[in-house]
Length: 387
Ligand SMILES: CC(C)(COP(=O)(O)OP(=O)(O)OC[C@H]1O[C@@H](n2cnc3c(N)ncnc32)[C@H](O)[C@@H]1OP(=O)(O)O)[C@@H](O)C(=O)NCCC(=O)NCCS
Image 1 (cartoon, protein in one colour):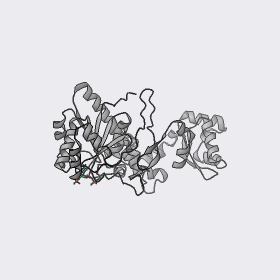
Image 2 (cartoon, rainbow, N blue to C red; image 1 turned 45 degrees about the horizontal axis):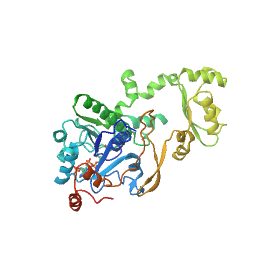
Image 3 (cartoon, rainbow, N blue to C red; image 1 turned 135 degrees about the vertical axis):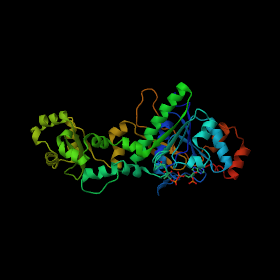
Image 4 (cartoon, rainbow, N blue to C red; image 1 turned 30 degrees about the vertical axis):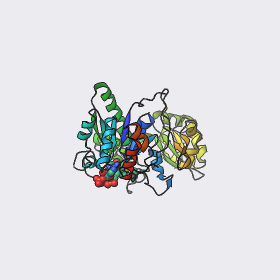
């Protein structure tokens, strides 16, 4: 099957969540994504304590369908190899702290000289300019400054401490944004022949994801004040505990949901409240409560932990998991690309690569190096010995 990006090559200098997620989107859509790692391994390869076939579970999660080349970019020979690869590539993505590429002698001007129509995406915490540009960042940093951490805490207790979101949405959101921007730049290049640099900041993206900021800009009120002043606007819902100790999440928002509650539950509109729902649910198990509410057309879900998500029949019917063989970890199950295409379905083809797994393939097939040259690069530590 022809895939939308199967004539596109990406040099993926990313390390840690934000960047690898962004390039993985494009690897799924057919691009040849070559992760370029230092010979000693990038910091995300062993990001957690538990390792599976030599890599952390987040590395397995974020590097599907990619190839791996080790290259010491601080070594002049490594840099030379990299610039040869740039000439044969369409896109370069990195998520180092700003200034790192320039220090390596691989700033945009240098990359552009090697490949005039290159698309270069620089992903960072605070962007390539501005007062905080030099600050290092992880997802939680952008979540904190964009208001999400405060808001998450405030949702459960308006006077309580800030609460961090589970998972790194400050990486995954901006990473998705980065791939979308790269695809737009690719379309522009294909129409005009002109490449460009893309500056994606986690903080900018997380500000853009925070609708409460627009609420504040329009009303001048803080989120809690706004909710207190206009309490009815959102309907009824929240996390509700059930008889068996489980939880449901009800989201009965909007007038149609209110109508359904009145019609099916024999209550007056003015009596609908979270307390009323809590009372109703107190005698039901989690799964019966979900059945009751979904049965009358209200958005409602059981609150799962990850083991139940993996077992859920609907999630499985949507092909969200794929089992495949990893050269070191054996048979493993990974999460599939979530969006369904009618013509060009992205497929999980290969698990996250081993360190330097494709050194020989890339140097031979793309750059025409012979065995002797490759051995020499290995001996000098410019590339690692192949796994
Ligand atoms: C994630 C982050 C905090 C890590 O900080 P860090 O470990 O100090 O890493 P930096 O990006 O500053 O630098 C990477 C270093 O590895 C070196 N490096 C990276 N790839 C290399 C390679 N292939 N060969 C040789 N050296 C390499 C860089 O040259 C740099 O060296 P230097 O410190 O001597 O300049 C930082 O990269 C960052 O803020 N990134 C942007 C925001 C982001 O994406 N955060 C992660 C989201 S979870």
